[in-house]
Image 1: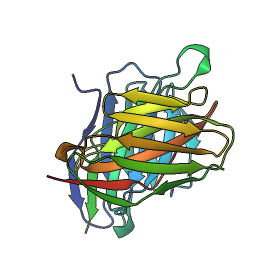
Image 2: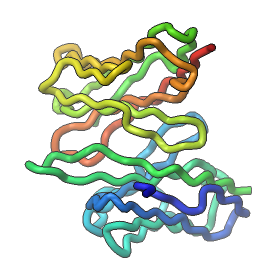
Image 3: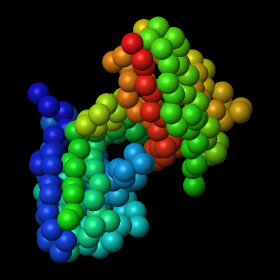
Amino acid sequence: DTAVSQTPKYLVTQMGNDKSIKCEQNLGHDTMYWYKQDSKKFLKIMFSYNNKELIINETVPNRFSPKSPDKAHLNLHINSLELGDSAVYFCASSQVVAGGVKDTQYFGPGTRLTVL
Amino acid sequence: GENVEQHPSTLSVQEGDSAVIKCTYSDSASNYFPWYKQELGKGPQLIIDIRSNVGEKKDQRIAVTLNKTAKHFSLHITETQPEDSAVYFCAARRGGSYIPTFGRGTSLIVHP
């Protein structure tokens, strides 16, 4: 009965490789997000999708490409991995409730990416 | 844009003591203030939130207070227990926005 799930939990790879992280939510939410958490625990928004449409794209290198095949999934593909990409990546989801009010975000367990 | 300052960055207390974490925000249009708890190796989890039409909210041992005039809000944990040890994040979000602005987190350590 996991609400927001991510795979894999750990990802260790060499510089220059391409990798993907998958995210799924079973909450029926219409909005999904990707966050990057650095070693100092700072949470930085990367992308947000609402009903499969990109609504927020912060200043993220174009090596990062999110893909949303349906409302329940938002995957993150990263090309040409660099040392600075090492971090914990969190997927989250939320729902617009009555009156256009945005409900709170629910986070997944995170994917620890280590680039060697 | 919104700026959220969170203090202290580290807080160490004895079991049974109270803990208070404070945040200030800059955007007067912010109207939603969630607090998240992140345990080691896990994602942030919502523990309590408050909207700008309310000054205080309680849930068992945790409470949040909001002062809209001064633009600050605080998390209060009473009778702390070792399992309260975690990183706590405050956040502020303006009406109509999907994305909250997070504080930099407070590492709370509760010593048995």
